[in-house]
Image 1 (cartoon, rainbow, N blue to C red):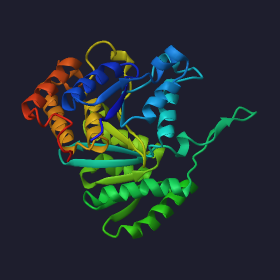
Image 2: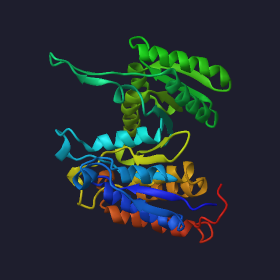
Image 3: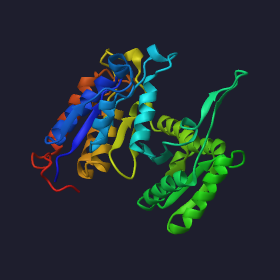
Amino acid sequence: MPTARVIVLPGDGIGPEVAHEARRVLERLVPEVELEERLLGGAAIRATGEPLPQETLDACLGATAVLKAPVGDPEFDAKDVRPEQGMLALRAALDVYANLRPAIAGDVDVLIVRELVGGLYYGRRGTLADGTVFDTCEYHPSQVERVARRAFELAQARSGRLVSVDKANVLDTSRLWRRVVTELAAAYPDVELHHALVDSFAIELALAPESLDVVLTENMFGDILSDLASGVAGGLGLAASASLGDRGPGIFEPVHGSAPDIAGTGTANPAAMLRSLALALEHALGRRDLADVLRDAVDGALVTSPTPDQGGTATTTEFGDAVVASLEHRLTTEEMTWATTPS
């Protein structure tokens, strides 16, 4: 088994703090992994003038997985060059079109599959002579087809239920979306497909999330709905994501932002970052066994060592200590090496 190479992007704000906890957990779980840190976002702008330096991109392109902490800094909010531009450029360069955002708590187990490299965030934009500003939502049928296929396959492996969310009563892009998804459904007769309009679906997600399983939607709708789902399942501080393509490394990152207001205080909750690491273990490193053990350890730490956002007093490091202690207890030395056969 070739040695895995993981690029860690510490990002901005609380990013370096939560990334540190993920890094030490990964080093304990898979000691043979090659880890390398690179700059992205505001830290990269300060050092190089670019939010995504070429050396960072080159390192990510050659990696097994990219473990990314949040980026963003109010210092750059009104600037032409902003940290978030580096994040969007990295997603496009790696073509990680399928963004998986699980929301799990109690009876709720929802997986949102968000198209990540098309739509409004990547369409044509500009300013007209009269001062009108425009952003364009654009989709090609092939972009819809590939992410829909990923969602159907995920639904097959779960309950066999899929909801495709659009705004087909208003938008031409949504009518394209619905047509492509409907046509593709014929190839997946074991998956029960429903269509929903985004506004009414938001009510269903808020009031009856336990009735849902896999949700497929476009970029902007997915951004909004996945945050809502995270709130239903306990808050953004707990939400992880995996962004996957057909080739090359995926990007694994928490859904929450860089929280500059608490950076350096030692109070950031690393749960979402650690859950993102679990997704990397599962989808990039082929270690579903270790991913499950890590998820259990994080769930346990949320009970025994909660950070202030969860009503406790544990520091970021103390939360990480609780996770590591649980892993030490749960896993044998043999299980915690890359030499074991991946599941």
